[in-house]
Length: 232
Image (cartoon, rainbow, N blue to C red; front, side, top):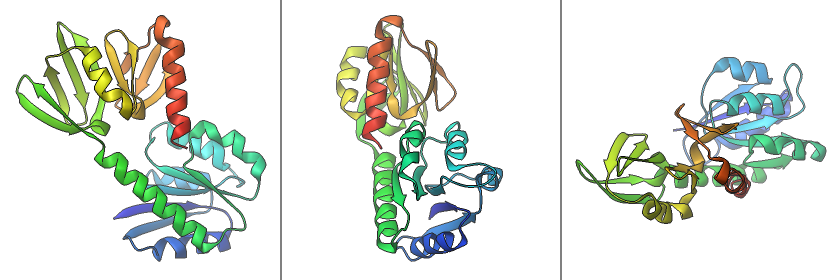
């Protein structure tokens, strides 16, 4: 079951978006909100969020900024009648835009693309590695980062931690095509799970802080920016 949120102060637009989502082939649960504050107070995670930009109390850009503090996964699809807002919204990494007036076929197409993209992220590219406990295989999307310590590699993943024999350069070569980058001589980071960069600290989605060396700072920030732009 996919969860879809619609946040728009226009009742007719909410009805159109809701009908398109409920009529989509996959099983979808749809929630409606009339403004950003109401959405945030719900405190629910969604797979797709249709978000109007121009709303009372809290606009769509501020709403998305607050959502992104805790949720990098939700696909935000902005629904707006103003092209001027587009450049301001890139900081929250929207999935796409729908310009009003919106047609039902456009909504369905965006839902299809967002769900397909989510499936690819969930599956990820499998990585097989020899941990000290035995052979393991995980989707690359489940790996937060690798740390080199005491001639071993510590894999920090959604499933837990694994100690692995090997060189960090070896695994960087394997993982770089799937959105991994070196932030430090002892760390390789999954850019998918980077929440923020604060000075020379990288804040990960699991709450860990990873060092960013001065030597690698410019290159790492550039790789992160390109990765995030390619995902828009």
